Image (cartoon, rainbow over all chains, first blue to last red; front, side, top):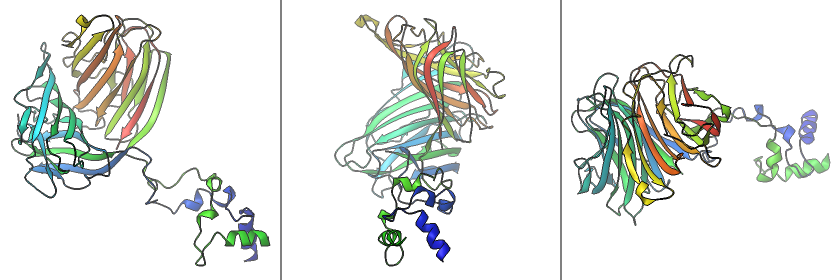
Length: 218
Length: 218
């Protein structure tokens, strides 16, 4: 015990504060989690869902006032039905109707793998004016084995009870006719009730495969 | 020794719990790492930065196993006026940058001198149709001392061996004719092989200066 006492004392200031020689990497080697230490980054992964012939992909938790905005990131979303559209809606509380009022815009740029083409257009059949339908994200998606879509969508202050809820999405896609197509979708949920949940699905058939990740942005 | 013992005693509770006074910032000077995952560092990880200095090109390996890679480029200054800043991908560890790509490119622009120069344009002469050449992410960038390009590039799931590889880039730059141009480029690398590298290069001359940073998103 005497030897131990001397060892500790050598690593203390006269005020009893541990000096650097008292602690090294080995000392903290058994600490595998600092539960209360905040994340060092501004992008926090909250949830990952992998589609597997999924009729819907729902995110029903983690969406509250913790973060100012939330971001969904889509990786190789592959639908089961050729020409189907990837789409989303939201709901409040614990409701499961997914029919919030949306006003949105949709424009896209497209270019074929074959020679020629290349166009830029507004999609008035895919926007909404105070509509409650699912909002189109992916357009006439291809179901070849290597086709899919990837991108991201940010939702701003879904927990606000004062403001509408803005969203912005960019989705790069492989169209069923072998087009490279990028969609720029933006709009707002015209409600002052907090939005707590989101649903993603195909307009026809299911979501064969793909990954959707939900992040909090601080 | 007695003084030290009394000082330390003041920094522990009667049950032996260390109080805040037992440590200060210097106490941890010899702790240079903690167990993996012990501190949540966020879902977006800085990987590396490359600073151009009259560089013929700048390449990055898709190191790690991230689902997505994000490149921020800041103040890219071409060595030659009217140069195009471009990207291409490699599937063979950087030996060749010649992956087939189909992409879109459109611009919105505004001149410094006249309102007549505003507009948005799809660039049918600059997009790629399953071509292996470099993909332009700006057009006719200016090489005046104060002219640059800044923006970002997302590459989704480059390690995947099932799907094509989607990418999205958004930029703003000073065009050689003194326009501010917002360029939007998106497409896919039409291969099911894993991408190993991305390379940034000018169509003529070098990258005089600027910084490109790579991040992984998990």
